[in-house]
Length: 402
Image (tube, rainbow, N blue to C red; front, side, top):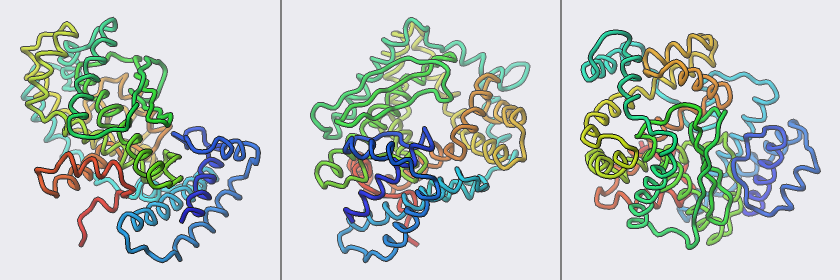
């Protein structure tokens, strides 16, 4: 499979010449990237080569070794996703669900308005008052904004505690580290740019006010035990220890992203179970941010309820990208059912424009990763989680066997 793996990497790099977002990370041979830039293959040439590779991978005899078998499945699925992305860039139109299945190996459940109305009723009881619920939630959360001049010290404190917890349960490669930058004018709130060599650049978007919960969310999701750890463990276990070059490149619009985003979100809960998080933040992060730690429990009651509206984002994206909603209608849906302040809702619609069905990777991905890990021995939760982060397992491989 090594030859097929090299061909796959070079096809991903070739795709990156047509799609600036496609290659999220690459730390393989620099000559391969230069070759892709010089060759300037057309989308048709890339797709044809990928289809030939897919035929060869389909004919490959399945190895007896489990991780080698997972590797074959991974290469097959990633190549199929590359073909689908090439077809999309060539003009093929897919529905939201067709696209997510083709790219991310999963389809998110659909929820109607009644589902979200029930969630809103529970939130309404926690945030009583007059006016629209979204405005009341925003006014409540506005009391817990991290002051701009406190952002860096709060994030550094959050990173320190997340790293300490992770290091206590996982063995990370020597020399791993990352740096943090604060940026503006992005469609996302935070991003990890993995550089290889166990290093990352994490960027935090400060366009909108940042609430206190985002400190731990971003420190865990982007850092420990999220994207930074995931990429570092893959590099150590699969690229260096096994010589699997396909993991030296990360194709953003592929099944790998559901594992990456789902594990990063689940990693927050693994690191800080609900009550432990409240106690830790009330004593550390709230005071550092200049907030009243005695209100942490109240804040996280509302936070936990609001977080359950996450699938409203999927539904807004599905209806918007399938043509049932305009951009304004999608933003209105997000305000009503995801309880986003209008500016955040508009920012989220921009995310839909740029990343499309990628949105399922955060909530559906978290649910699939959680269910996979917690089906195993509860006493080994961290071990099972670390094994997942070091493996080529696919989203469809997270579900129980029939």
